[in-house]
Length: 428
Image 1: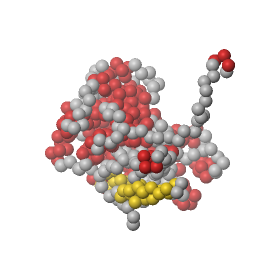
Image 2 (image 1 turned 180 degrees about the vertical axis):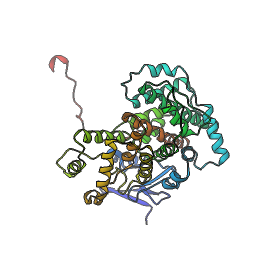
Image 3 (image 1 turned 45 degrees about the vertical axis):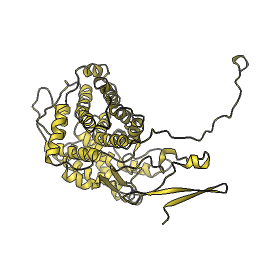
Image 4 (image 1 turned 120 degrees about the vertical axis):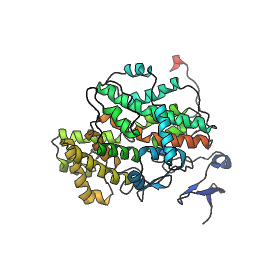
């Protein structure tokens, strides 16, 4: 097979190299297209056919339903690793040994306080503020308390910046929830594991002793692992393109949070619960809504089924479905919304219309169910997504800076007015 692609236009032929990835993915390298052709560019709205970078972090095959972090299958990582191990793997490239993991956790615990003045910023938000807006603002505000620029040529400086945000971000997440619920702010307990401490910071009541629920902790751990990275999605690409201007890590992460907020991205699990609530408000007839979903003339869309990338079963959904069943079974929750979710799931997995089109429940469907069961408000779901995605964003930012990638600067095809003379105000 030729390692070059030929573009022919207006009687001229232009050759461009073909790059082959480690999983045999092929890409035509068109970075010299404009200069070679005297101004021709490609146009690809949404960048669905355009690679923005070469990355060694995450491999995703939507057709086969494969997701791997640094070569490790998501199934094996979710079963055998914890979230902090996966974070280390994504960021630094290899699974940590016992000493590395212990040091990593200890260093995170050392940085796990947030300047008290941050509470003033949090206090300035009304309770009605959306948690994602609060989280994005607080993350950006961290820059004021950590103003020095990260020296990306220094491994120590890079490591300490990474540890600092991994330590402080969960505090901001917990504070965002506790502000919404009217609970006193909590710094947690550094004798606990990373995920268990997150759970305690979020849910400990001031008048009650915190009691650990292992099934809940394990489900939360799996959810964070499953959301930890997902290749060049909207928020990850945002983190990389903001960072490509040499903006700092915290500023780039804040931009990623804002990108994640949208209902077509991280807000999808919130949209799932809002859909379930609407079905319940209308009497809870799942068969009626399944019929509406199959009716092309009906504007109703079944949220949480199918995936923009996966054309097969979302591999993360297989894992989290089991965790959802365990959490609901252990907590013994009776909730009509969750009953509707189970009904939709059962019907979709048996209905030929959905099976033939591979419209299976995705990770957003099951994550929303678990978060609701845990008592997390619907508008906090995307905040939890951001918490899981944090190590992926860090890894992508770090890779981009270490590779010294050029500043992101897409082109366009202009379709506006041609040159025209200015008309004075009196003559318009």
